Length: 277
Figure 1 (cartoon, helix red, strand yellow):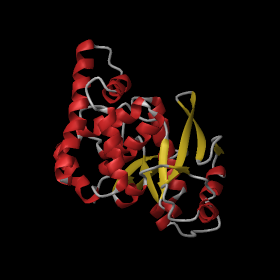
Figure 2 (cartoon, helix red, strand yellow):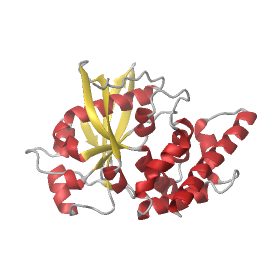
Figure 3 (spheres, helix red, strand yellow):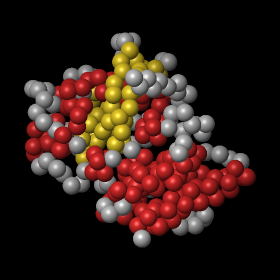
Figure 4 (cartoon, helix red, strand yellow):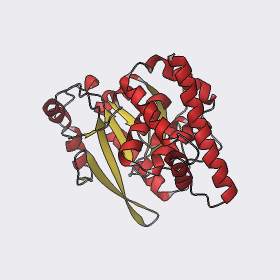
């Protein structure tokens, strides 16, 4: 039996986001077969025992797999969330849960995503979920390349809850992060790619091997080209974004991090290029 993962977060924002994640999994149990956790929680949950501490995340991102989505009852995802203190987030696909932790009120966004390829007509997906999800290029790979893990936490009433969830694999996570890196140009996305490459316990070669069955997919090829552009040399935007997100002010460590980010991403790309030829 796999022991559920538990976490001790130093950031109150990440702690709040984890509590919301546990609550969402509890509330949406009837939809669990069609929900896949993506976004910033992936490296934290897939690589929990690494010595390098992740900077954390402040939201929850869930992809909806239309292929696995079926009518599951009278209540939609939106009905359930709005009936349990979640509020519309001001844009389609987003809901906000406000928690009070250690005397502070914290707003945690929960975003629902869907592949650009659809799988279900928009109107049918809306009828089943009540959600107008955010289109996330590359997320279709997460439906085919995911893992199952067990996590455990506390609900707002203080009771403990554990769940087995589907979560994007390292492969699909890197592809999705490359896409959003190019779309929104946030330093966190470059950082997350580097973090996975720097901390995966089996090394970059194992990540390259995991990519092999997916090398023919257009989404993977596009992700590679994006990463190659952002990490084309040590002075490129990608390494600089990693430094910015990591937050170090030490000049020597900044230079080390710049070189490390560039070398690791290009090591992966070179290994993948050899496997493609």
